[in-house]
Length: 260
Image (cartoon, rainbow, N blue to C red; front, side):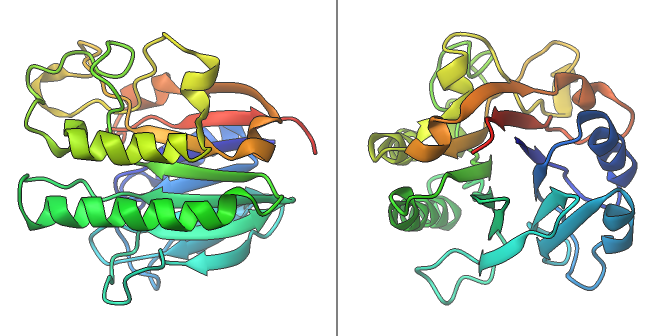
């Protein structure tokens, strides 16, 4: 079972790239972020024509997540992260697909920091960790996949250089501590688990020729509970997708789980 996460940075403008990647990579589950469209304008027909059942949680012009299942219908479990009824951002969608619980999540960026946006990011991460604790031990394999907007370490394996990013919310100690707390609570960073030292960048900013210089960051992660980790067989990044015409500034990251 192949599960991927892909921040498409606007599903309407990137739809040709998305459909192209679905045909090439054929993920069984694809978690999308930053679809940037309302529920009413989501391109459902094009996704279904590509052979995927789909759920989406849209927001006009901002945020938005979707969950695609090849040849089947994902069964929705939860729409929106619990813990704050006043939070109207579309950032979390959870479903069951072929006996695996999968969530597509788009964690707040948090810039500028310090400030209200960074406070919201940290509060959202606390809510995510609290909800993850309820999923960890329910007996089913669980994959929490998405754009976490956290660079885990300063190592070259996670970021080309920290020089331009030291004040960015993605690298702050509080953001990293929340991400590490998730791991300490029993969740495994799948890509890093299988590739301990390799640079596995998933994001290259459009500015300053960062793609051309391979000046990337690793901010898209697939976090696994113990039953999912026991089935983990492969993981990687479809890096070439980032270099195509009118591409997202992210590349898809993916894992493969053995059949349960």
